[in-house]
Length: 236
Length: 236
DNA sequence: GCTACTCTTTGCTCCATCACAACGACTCCG
DNA sequence: CGGAGTCGTTGTGATGGAGCAAAGAGTAGC
Image 1 (cartoon, rainbow over the protein chains, first blue to last red):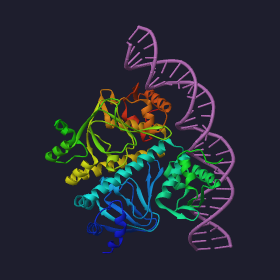
Image 2 (cartoon, chains in turn green, brown, blue, cyan):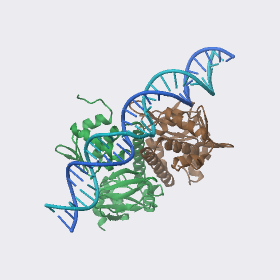
Image 3 (cartoon, rainbow over the protein chains, first blue to last red):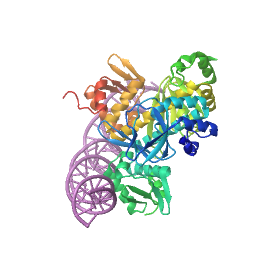
Image 4 (cartoon, protein in one colour):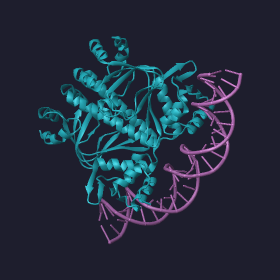
């Protein structure tokens, strides 16, 4: 079974850390590989959730649509990351739609299989718990951010998070390695495309970032951090 | 050991659901009761987290303070609810301060004990996972709410959540059974005390709520739901 | 039951951000 | 390489809600 080729991904994944190779092999064999082409979907919002995935290749964006048609971009995942977990583990419906923004592949386990594995491998159960605790903390932080911060700071935080998570180090800065439109940023930070555009233009003029169509390069992360933390600008 | 008196609470708690009485007894014995007087603290933000609690009596408010001094009210817990879990299970620091707003008592287990129990009782591990998954979902929802909704709707949502969680049915409505100031509501919804005051006054004039000093009674939950869901008012 | 304190209300001002429109730039495809 | 479509920029209002000040209402302690 070709699944085994993905073992290295699992070994580093937060869910399976600390497990021995035999156990990992068993886990990998219990999973099922699913490929989704760019533009395709792993699941849609409101669908009942059955499967927890670990992305092994590609990029997946998770968006929520509100009743009024507002869209919120919840997260972008890259290889090695876990997704679909919250719904699959809480035996509920998917809170968001997962769309492949590049040709993608993910290993999936149904919730029953996951439960079984957790019983057999307590280490894994603890890992799952730690993973979820981290997610809660993340959303709590983002919640507070949204509740207390101005748009500019929120955008700075969002870019820093993305740079950290999927940034690629280039000679002149950190490229956010992802097609990332102004619209996307607006949906991540709860603002409008216009405001984002103005903010990014301002930063570009100050040399903090370099941006093009669906592309952002962070040239001066320190300056961005200063904005995110609301320090006064270092130079006049 | 008097802990056993609290068995009924645990049996209904989301963490211990589905466990047999022998196991529960063991769990309860492994816990340590902690009492905190009104105004006292279970823990402070930034402290390293060691203990997961189940509240057996009282009310605890959880607040986060931002670097700039903005305060955010994250949650209010009543008897039977789990708290301190996210930090204790993720072996991190407490993301919030837990203050008793009434004389309170809680059973606590250190993270090591919890880990041990989860290994011994897989049912409990699954419960923990489900609990955390629910928390993630909740914060994701609140995040989206904050990102896309106007203040009035957010306040409506907040009151409905509170009514659901700790409301007490009265003959003329649902009393939110908690000292709940305008300030508190503002901190829950990411707005200011002034705006909250205006909104509540408006609702009171329309007969939707009845409010006094640190007290809110929901007279017409349906109207509040309509506001929360942004339906046009049913009558002129 | 007076006093001090805290919580709440309300009027006013101001501004960050939204909303819309129009234009400009880039990309893809035939 | 030209045209259509998408994405980004910028100017001009409009406004929801923040921020502040001052007064009103409850509450608690003495």
